[in-house]
Amino acid sequence: MSDKDPLQDDRGNKDISITNPSGRGEIPTTLRSGATSKVDGEPFLVGENMTGGYGRGPDILNDCTVAVDRGEIAVIVGPNGAGKSTAMKAIFGMLNMHGGRVVLDGEDISALSPQDRVARGMGFVPQVRNIFPSMTVEENLEMGAFIRRDDFRTTMEQVYDLFPILKEKRRQPAGELSGGQRQQVAVGRALMTQPKVLMLDEPTAGVSPIVMDELFDRIIEVARTGIPILMVEQNARQALEIADKGYVLVTGRNAHTGTGKELLADPEVRRSFLGG
Image (cartoon, rainbow, N blue to C red; front, side):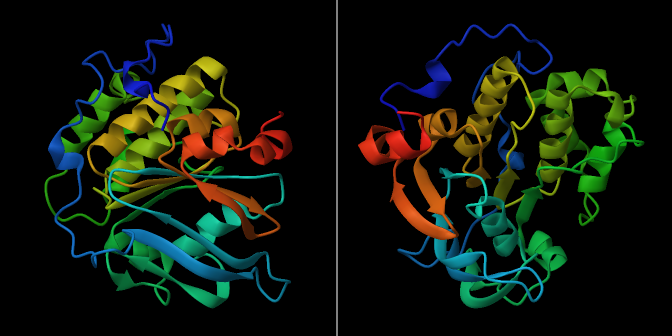
């Protein structure tokens, strides 16, 4: 991370449709996952030496490894076609892998379906088609709680506290919201599962710079509760500024790995991927 705490950085955003008026870093602890059984020294979530592709097509990932630990934000960046979103899909079980493994909280989940991975504690927000547009905001959040058998109303109120505009618009069809607000619905629905880890595939795609900044602030808040966040992001420079760990992929392989601060300071990374 940068020397300056991003949570203390007032970026001058006055967009109240995203801002949390109750203050930053105030997510109730019940949004957090439970105690873990992670093996000492092993990342909480790791996609290790992943090799594979779609169907019978060529390999897109080639011995690729990404990992994130509790309370961390790990960011995957790289050029178009580098395999960033493919790496996320592999970790979520949406890819044919014939090499490597995925371990969550000390358990090898490589053979599990995406549905079973959700039950194990994965929350995944895809880049597109990540809401039910004809359903109301509240119905979308309720869909996120489909695996739960307890009373989830408290969690819903906590999501509304994180994203206040969603409570205001809870009876409105989600498809009528702005791009940034739809992303809030998608993230909120994933949080309704009380995930152990949150995976975001380009959460700021198509939103304005102001909305991007505020979404990043909310992502930082979630990470501060202890939930690991693994994120693919097209806005590489801004994402690395908030990243504890960064992975630069090229043609499905790890090209550079380090802290966000290290990658931002790396001349080769700056020249090749950050515009100098």
